Length: 294
Ligand code: PLP
Image (cartoon, rainbow, N blue to C red; front, side, top):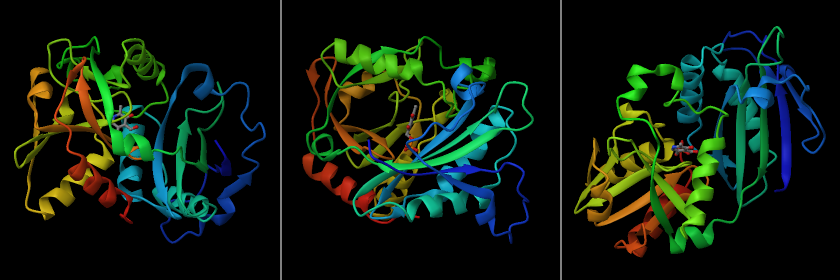
């Protein structure tokens, strides 16, 4: 990965929206060590993040990402991020992105153990080349996430709707998918309710209806899915949030895993059985997702 830029954000900045935050953003060498050894982000995965796609220097859906950062902070009892300051950091990082696709990460950690304040930083790097996966799609396996769909309400400390830095289990699910001969996974709750991918939202198509699992079951509300639904509604399609059984995936007319950097990857097989794959609609969805979006 080619790093382009990194900025440390001063957490003590004013929250007056008229502030010019330039002096509170400290550019650092993105390839050099920067964090304290006592960082709780690295020691405990205790923090939150966002990944923003950047196309030809334009950061996509910044407001939706900042809103989700604030939502994750609330769920994790972290101090509310100063969104004006983060927006200025995203603009500064985007200005360093070359033509083509990049990824900006926003990270808010609980800080150094016993320290006074959170640690916050933003990075920009070249995005991986996702052309092939957008064109050819992904084979998925269905994996039990191990919690029933009532767990998020019963046990909010699981932080299931927050985008926390604790992604080791999500990465383990992708490795398990590869061991089973697939490319990616779709999680189901232990009571059989369809959820999401380890790093993506699930969108299913039934005729002219596009459906995604309802966020209440403890999934991340995807910014890409939200944007895609607005686009599809504008084109006259019906969209819905529903509680779906695992069997719905095999019965869909088409299905995609969607996320901010990979964008729309059509699902071509589920647990080894082929699923109808719509190359034209997938290409159209990705063309939309690659167009400048605010
Ligand atoms: N669900 C999970 C668990 C994710 O990690 C992600 C993105 O990384 C998504 C859904 C999709 O979110 P977005 O479209 O905002 O990238």
